[in-house]
Image (cartoon, rainbow, N blue to C red):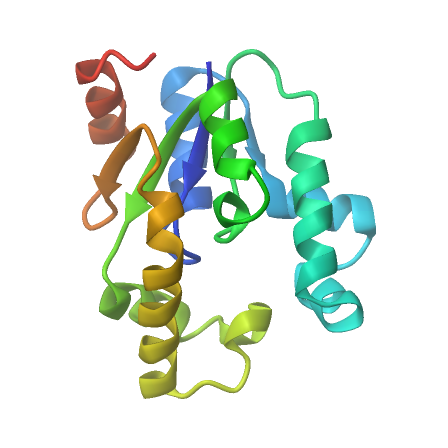
Length: 170
């Protein structure tokens, strides 16, 4: 089964995805890294040159066009489930897991890497928290459509695997 990890930037989709894939003995894919490799530039650069709307279209096309193996863990971008019919498509084609975290915890994780994240450029700590709170409010209706919702605080791959098994989702 394909497992799509969704959640806000900084929640641990890539880190957890790699660890979960190792536990499940299946390949791991990062949608953002796939897009960067295909475009030959960072997402930040693509955002700057083409805008968010163009990026979201590219992201939509990429998630649906890529030939993922039957069993794989895929880390999506933070906004992936919130555009077009992406959340519906992921739910129809695999198991979606929302890694939920509060805005304060996300801000703490994201503070150091703001330069690499186009939506966060120029935000101070207070602005960052406010931005995250608003985005979570906007995105939660999509994130909460995931088949499994887990807390990202203290989450580890073994616990996540147990939660998946307990829900009989694999």
